Length: 376
Image 1 (cartoon, rainbow, N blue to C red):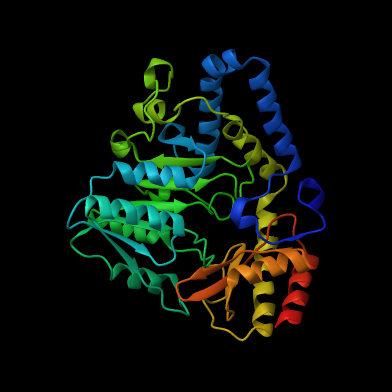
Image 2 (cartoon, rainbow, N blue to C red; image 1 turned 90 degrees about the vertical axis):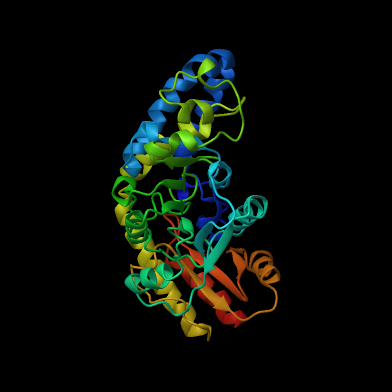
């Protein structure tokens, strides 16, 4: 499927997880939406856009198994998380429980608001090697106290690439009366997502990563009973110009002039994957990822993070490497070997992460193994 993507053929691209990669047919539809906007921008932005956004919301709602009126489009998960944190009624004595694997910029967001409002952030440590999801739920839940008001959890972590048992934790939290806030940036089209079954209070997902929609397309889902508490980041026209059915939508959907083309292309990205038997694509990529991970461990003598099974690993896997400077290593891979991979710190460790999607094949994995064999 390499020819269906715009990626540079001279680069071995093993970093779909960072920003995704948009297929050519989807990108063409994206550009067509931009042309429609520019052909008659006034009519498009004052009349047509609301009906088109509603269609796109409902198509996405069907895909992630929730009602289309319970989600809004946002440019990225960071925007969504900021909107929710600003809206939470937290103060001195309250605790937010999360893992030590959360995305760094969003941990920083939590920390800034915690300092301002006086609540505490508890990051539950991860002991490796991990064993089972059941064991992890038990370990994580030991961090809950009588002061825990919110559980914030990545369903798939960016740093370690692990699939965490979000649904099981949501179930326990609901029984305990604790709010659940799930960061699912890496989830849509990577692993099955059924928001209705999971029943989180808040769920944030990216469409530009594994769903391969254009950059700047993500979503924020909020349970209906909590929607009135979510304050818009920007106060704009609201219901004066937006005919959306709820304040949650009309206060958050239109916050000034913007290009909605990426949002409107999401249904096309969904259809693209349906047309290309994406279940088979995911299965092939998962298998290639796990096989490659085993081959890397044959080369690099390092600590194991988790077992090599479907419970923990999808299309990404992170490996601990004992080097002094991760950024230098990343750019060496790119500049000397034309190999695109993320390298980043996790606590006192440095990780590099494989990431396989439709355009990758065994030759890409072989190239990685050859380079690592030369370097290690």
